[in-house]
Amino acid sequence: MLELKQVTVRYDKHLAVDGVGFSVAKGETVVILGANGAGKSSLLKAMAGVVAPEAGSQIALDGTSLVGRKAHEVTNAGIALVPEGRGVVGLMTVEENLRLGATPPRARHDEAARMTQVFEIFPRLKERRDQLVHTMSGGEQQMVAVGRAMMSNPDYLLLDEPSLGLAPIVVTDLFRALARIKQTGVGLLIVEQNVRVSLRHADRGYLLEAGRITDEGSAEELMNDEIVRHAFLGGDI
Ligand code: ATP
Figure (spheres, rainbow, N blue to C red):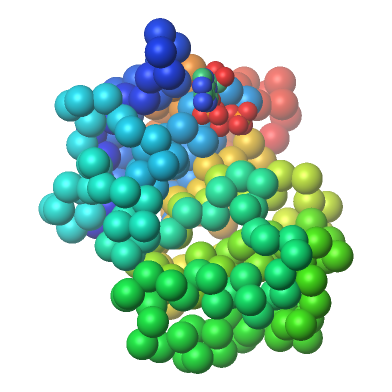
């Protein structure tokens, strides 16, 4: 279980995340819905050891605190971040990018099996394994980013707006692949502005507004929730 309590992120005087708490279990998909600037990326960065949360923040994996751990230590504990903008290396091939994901000690022993699994989830990547990533479409690059995170053998995958900038059909394919990853027992935490698609694929969700959780419920409850409807797309979801 991945558990957060009172997580706060501040940039100088600006409070980006304000006392946030929630949990994600293995094999579960949880979505955090939030508009631009709500604090979604800051929350994931704090979880991934990329930014330091304020004193008093609690982030724990199966009861062990992750606060103060460096990003590579968090990855090696079993949490992989797929950052906004993907973070893939354009001048390297698909296969080279995937191999980069297998550098944590927890992933080294079964690299070939992990790559086979990634190619099963994303057959397109197998076809394009020797292609330079910068020559690929946005959707394909997102597959590389998710595939690379899977190469670290994670228990939990954190995804920062995976649908951003992708065509609806590509988003549907991507979320289908994420559903397959969930079936392998990985816990998924997805932060998204795309309410409709993300709730369709989630078990539960939270609404993040100005750094605070203002609502939570099952995906179905949130889909029909007036607060969520009014926070996004003027009530039209
Ligand atoms: P977006 O979808 O636009 O990325 P978000 O929900 O991911 O938004 P964050 O990127 O976490 O939100 O930003 C939350 C707030 O913190 C915003 O007001 C943003 O301007 C501010 N912020 C983010 N990163 C920094 C930083 N490095 N320095 C100062 N302020 C920052």
